[in-house]
Amino acid sequence: MNHQQIDLLAKQWIVDAADRPANPRVQAIVLRLVADLCKAMEDLDIQPSEFWKGVEFLTNAGKNNELGLLTPGLGLERFMDIRADEAEARAGIEGGTPRTIEGPLYVAGAPECQGFARLDDGSESAQAETLFMQGTVFDADGKPVPGAKVEVWHANLLGNYSFFDATQSHFNLRRTIVTDAEGRYGFQSIMPKGYGCPPGGSTATLLGLLGRHGQRPAHIHFFVSAPGQRKLTTQINIDGDEYLWDDFAFASREGMVPPVTRVEDPAAIAARGQDKPFSSIDFDFHLHREADTAPSAQVERQRAAA
Image (cartoon, rainbow, N blue to C red; front, side, top):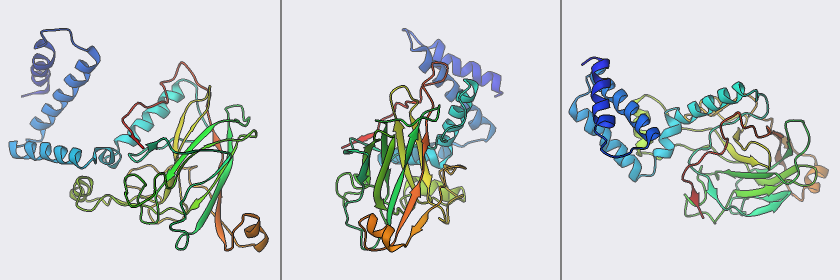
């Protein structure tokens, strides 16, 4: 069949077969996806056994709760960011802190702290490098934003996240920090490690068939929000990681790899209440004011909750 014939056939199945009012947006999306899949089946001569193997793969990925991991692994979450950047540029919104992917491991309801928070529960302190990170949240005019919410989450030394890893305490390495009167935030934590897709899981299996690895560099996730400002979803990567520019999720971006300073001066160590050298990262967030001409920066999706 040629593509025109397939389009007509898909229209019969999805549009003409409707015998009651349909949701026009859902109908249009399903029509396009079914038609495109049928074209791929025809163009690539996809055999029934291959088709059903694909269905089995998606079924198992859903059972394994890996569809949220597969999405960035195939570049789809990065593609949504590219489209969002383009939409903001068309609306005259440029500059500011770059967005990057959210990923599948956010958990709502992290404890809220004013100005400063300690993220880790101390269980890995003996093995980990202590990390202090601090900065200011600015609006589009370069003014500090008091009362902004900086939600932060990252992995432990094994590359695992609390709640998804039952061995960790609740909300380990997760907090919501409210900026102070000068728009500043800060936290103490441990230097995170990168992680890999679960061995033998759906994502790792597909990436292997594609000749790709499933590793991410060490990184720290952020939601930054404030009234009248566009919500920022982003993450920084830890400089020096071997996968810094080889992220399986394609989330590494220029401007999101801040320098890591090694603090070894005894006076500076004591001023932080520490007894050994630590690492420090300075990073400011620059937000955009909300605009009716740009798509919403609030992404509605099912997320884990405590």
